[in-house]
Image (cartoon, rainbow, N blue to C red):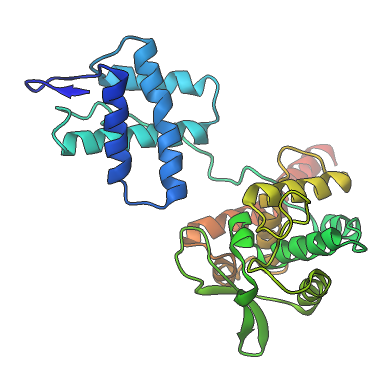
Length: 309
């Protein structure tokens, strides 16, 4: 992309790469987020090159969005489009482009409900009961899944957990967490007795050494911290082993299960659940409340009784 008299065009790939590098360097975000932006921006440059577009206009951005929508999920399209918007906002700000062609280009409307299902308490018991605790890997997996359900942990929180994060708060044993988008371990989850016992049983079998709370037992990387991908794979394997094989059931389903069970007896305690789930906005917590109220809604039964009784 080169600047001419108030007209900017996309030219050599080397120029594009240089401009992309400047944009990435400008971003003030965590490495994981920056990597997401980098990957999300490349398809846009590819689209422009494939279609011979040197001076992108609003119509080009709309066409790009619509092409993405043909094969990608709405959430992915939104991520890609948001990245393009950030790029052009920066380019205009730096005087590298005369106007923002993404202005007023809307992304797909997303369903505010969760895309993953949760488990019932009976299903949770079945999953945990299916994990053999005769091996080190089994003890680890049982403790990890119990913790994820009992504390509503995200996979990133499980991966980041260290041995030194085990502590106390008041009269409770707790695990301090470095949550999503957080730099410090300021929040914690209480460890109920069965969950703490499972963690202690795993650590006793594992022995001393290492920093991470949950580590690999594989010969290739034994003792190394479990990645979020490994955690997701372990959880998925135990879900499938228990007979719960669905695209809507993943590691994140355990977190949804925790939120749902926390509201099991009283959907009015959503402020407590917001704190427990570490939601920055009460609107996120209210999704659980709306689900719970919908499940309790007997409108269909009343209509059927009025017609068929």
